[in-house]
Length: 311
Image (cartoon, rainbow, N blue to C red; front, side, top):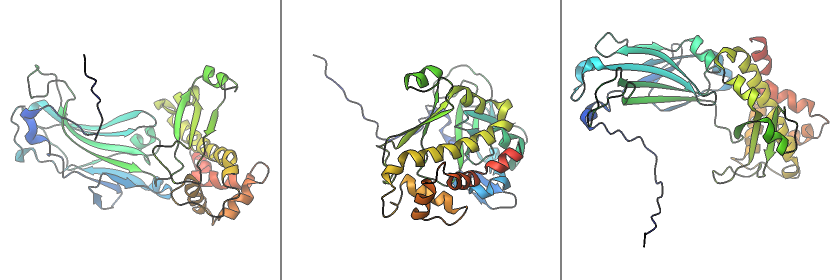
């Protein structure tokens, strides 16, 4: 009789099988990132970028990489390259900022230009990585890298907007799915609210799901459309927020207070960035036909006017 084996994931980590180059794994641990021009360099993996500071972003990476101090047992120095990349996970896009042969001249600081940031939606939600990897194809050998791009050392920095509890899953949705849900084929977006907007966020409970039409989703991930993508993203995010509040109002219109770490508290924090807003203020605005004042505040927080004007 075959015994049943249950596997349980206990932790996530990168496993590198290149025991022949283990001495290089920490070669980039001293890399650091500068977020704003003339600002200090940071080595922590995540940095918060306030929405009001996005236009000032001038990221630059200090490599602090010294090939002369490293042991290249198991791989030749001339086979390696040092690469700086920037990626936007929502747009599913990665840009190679610069690549330097390890046996050549390597600058101390690599700047990430506005051209790269514009391709990645402005830079407020990107991952910047410094990677030591194989620059050419080699013969397969146990314990050593052999495919072009095999990395031996990596350090990444995540630039993120303030963590807000109202972030929801966004799905690209086709015509047939919208139709099965009872909506027109070319529905722009749909908010499916499940409950718990005024309850603490839990990884085990989904508050809502946002469906965006696949044609729009593709536009947002198309590199040639990035000038158009930013105002669409900002405007869409504002309208989705309005829809979420309208759909969920029965769950909070009689609440006496806002629960901390709830999606509702995150919404109010965003509104307070524009003007002081209490729970009672939110209730009053949400009950106005069409919610004009609430919609205006959310668009102001999203920077909809600026993004359209600069498109």
